[in-house]
Image (cartoon, rainbow, N blue to C red; front, side):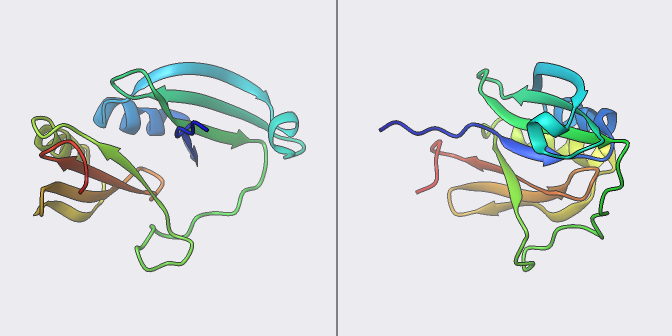
Length: 148
């Protein structure tokens, strides 16, 4: 049986702002813009429309789906993700060792929140930052290409 990661789905409050962060700052690319569609057929959220986009990594793998609901009252995420919250999750992006410093600096320059600054670890570097909606995003590089 073959199994591969499909994508991570993130509900955002402002699609333009999210695209600026994930594409403009992190460096992902638009794979598919699905535009706006009724939400009830895809999500069972009645009375709303949704806009969604698939983003791809540098090798063309679809890795992130961003979606935004409109015309509906949503529960507001209060604050930012914390590692110790039982519901907490994060999205991790793997960068090559030559580019992680540059990407991290773009994040700092963008004004995004930083949880753990870019730090050395055994065999690589990592950082935890926040996207515009407060979701935790991990940046990681492994000098030998993968965790051991």
